[in-house]
Length: 244
Image (cartoon, rainbow, N blue to C red):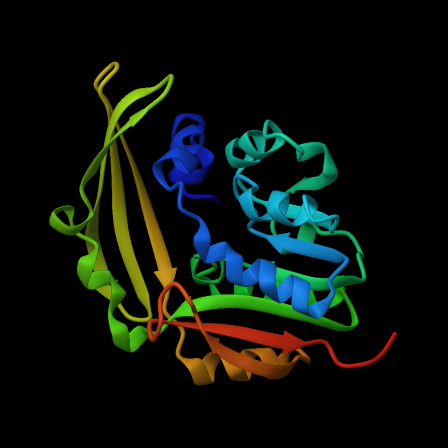
């Protein structure tokens, strides 16, 4: 089940305008370019921003996401016809022999159930060609990112063309590590509607992720520092062993 922020049509429609700076994706574009990736599986593609960035560069992209509302936004963007959009999780991806599989932003952490996480790693492995790569990020638990997930630190107001003023903020609901749950609130001035979405993220330790990758047949190639959040996130780059 996708969170309301992705599954609700009204919230999905304002997701991009409320978070227009996606410079965090530049590092992933650079990774795809550095690996010479020609075919990419974007797991948890959401509203399609990253998938379309790759497609504009001539890369064949398949985007999968469990939220229909987010996919509808993606399909309505310029260039969307260049991407294959699939409703579902990673297990819904067809055999691709992809050069690269990605989970950007919060995607890896949003897969909180161990069974779902292992199924995702297995499905990504199956979708990759021998020698293909998997890359994803996850926050460093010790940095306690959730301490700023409160109204004082997160409140802002945006005027969105065609929508009007929208107030947003986040409230921390529970910290039961490795799980952290928080609530987003959106208030639409046009009609006074108040919408909320509860989300849970799993904060995995570095050695846990390393063990999970090894258990699913990956070879860990590198752990990078996230350029947009130095010292606060791990970026894992792993390979499915073998040669074409």
